[in-house]
Image (cartoon, rainbow, N blue to C red; front, side, top):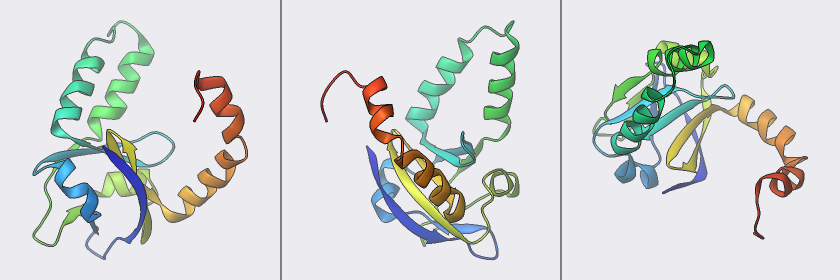
Length: 143
C-alpha cells in the first residue's frame, strides 16, 4: 500500500528520484500515465492489469468511455527505475502535470501520484477547506 507525501525535484533530463518507500511496491516495471486533477498516476503492473481489465469492460459504444480510455492509455508509459532509483518522466507526462522542477510524490493506496509542487499546494489548500464535508458525504464510518 502506498501512503505518505515526499518532496522531490526533476533534473534537467526529466528524471525524478522515486521515494525509497515506494520502490519495492512499484516493482521492477510499472506504469505511469496521465492522472486526473493535473497529476501523473503510477501503478505497479499488477494494479495496472486490474485497472486495464475494468476499462476494457466499459462499453465502447459510449462516447465518454472511449474518450476516457483514449486519454488514459495514450499517456501510459511502461517504466523502470535506474540504479539511483530514478524514473524518466516523458515530456507529454511532464506537460500534462506541469512538472518542471519541484514536485510532490504522494501515496494513494494502490498508486502513487506525482504532482507539480505548485499545483499540489493549490489542490491541497482548496480541498482542505471541504475535507469534513467530503468525508461526511462519502464515508459511512467514523475515522
